[in-house]
Image: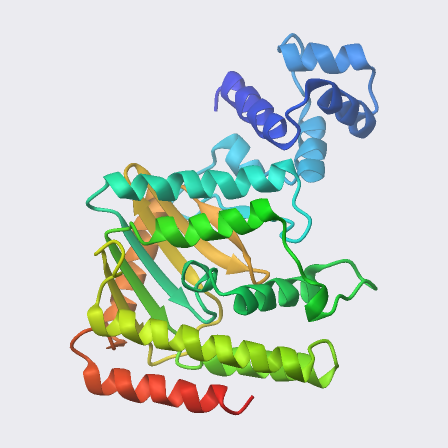
Length: 321
């Protein structure tokens, strides 16, 4: 690994975290315990960062050393954890969200774009236009990942207009992907109903709010069934396939191909993901997901009997709320 490549990777990573130069310099002064001029010399490339300094910076900024060094082998593939603050997003949070939307918009011009989503929670691109379902997942994220001692009630969860617009764009642009494959955990709605009942039992969701969630879940389920029967999104005409897996999933996995972008993602912390842009990783994950499709039950278009049985079972489950 050439020294200049390591240097450029490090600078690119820390400038992505703190774009404003003065703020970046002050931060490096604080964590490295060196003078400002010494920081400036390192940023100009006149003096190299020591290995100890690189480790300190990587730890403080949450940067993968594998990514910096480029240590990509058959047994090591770099992933990045994207931790977005969904309830009080700052500029860096919006930047990460906007970057993903920018990739999705390219699907309009790519006849070979493809999404394969193997999931044990409702897919974001399908539910985000549903106010209460979207709020529930934000609420659950806040409950599990928010600040300790600052538990919010369901009614206290609100999003900014800018974030709401990003949610709308996510749903809209996802429908321009030419072929979308969704493989659902057979207990996907069971998990959700259990969660809602739990939060009701500890009085963080009111019975009236559960009623609103119940109504919206029925509406969402009807929309999903219509999409499954057609086999395409009505507004774009792009194909969508729904499958029910014969086994449960420990988490959600999906891979996305749009133009020259090959993205592999593993769901973490309810709404966040670890992501890789490595093409080899994408190929391995896609191969595994395609094999999972072959062992699952298709409920789109031709699988009428299985489709009716699945959606009726979910309606009965929602009615237990």
